[in-house]
Image (cartoon, rainbow, N blue to C red; front, side, top):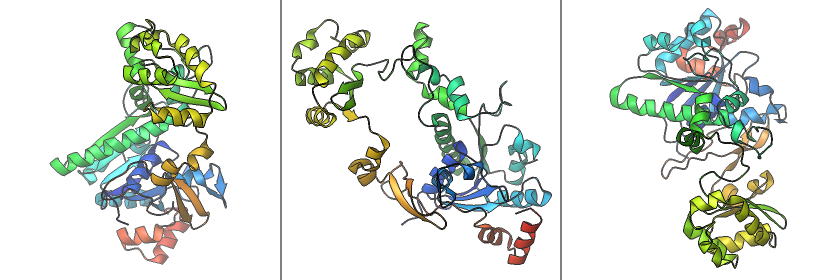
Length: 397
């Protein structure tokens, strides 16, 4: 296998838990050399997060595959010295400490760019590195709450709801990846390094798309509306014999195809459903009509019938169905077996970015704590085994 599209890019990864490691994971899958820097003895907090396989966290293994792992105590003078020398040879640094932490250590961007003016410094935090809230701690649920996502997730009259996975962290991890890669492109053109500042809350706000526009254009505060969409209908979940499916008719043509299949072609001339804007306004009546039809079929029957005529439809998959899906798990390789030195055979989530020439893939399993100390410290500093062992004893490595 090729090393990937980012072969040769050296990244010092100081991140932990989810948002930052997700960025490092994507860069590693694309071929960058990621050096994961962890606190001696303890490591990334997520090493203690379940579920576990032979004592190893699968949470950690999934997000840190393809990275080389070292331990380094940045609170010691020797630790800072080693880190600064590594910065001289690196292309990118990513971190997701609370705002101000790196500056307190004497390792903030303003300091690091004097060591390496071309360095790209990517940071992700709850509220960003400036603004009145920048000193606040940030977690995924905080970002979903303050960013507005929870207020519009759930059912009418129900409680505001966090998404089923940590979307605030994932969105900010994606955003940091995009920002870092944009800075790499700029560096290739201009030779300039720069700081990339990403906030969890900003990332959630950016993702709201139509939600913010509804308020900005009409003054209406969007509310929880279940599974339907504000801008088009039918675009919702519908009950069938053995569960539910989603049907997505994003234009008049698709709606016409659907009602013809339902045996009710006259609905296209119904004044309530003439145009998309009409269907959105009368969504409750239309949902009732569609469900009177859909409840007579199973998930598989609805899927087969609607796909045959070109109407977008999908089962609401449980995770076991996804893992065994011939398209997702098979052709698209979204689940990959990886052999870990402690956990043994594990299955991790594959990379979702597909390239035609240099494939993104899991290079090797996540490191055990300090697994690559010898390799990296010998490569960067020509240290002997005895010297490395001594630095371990005194708490630097």
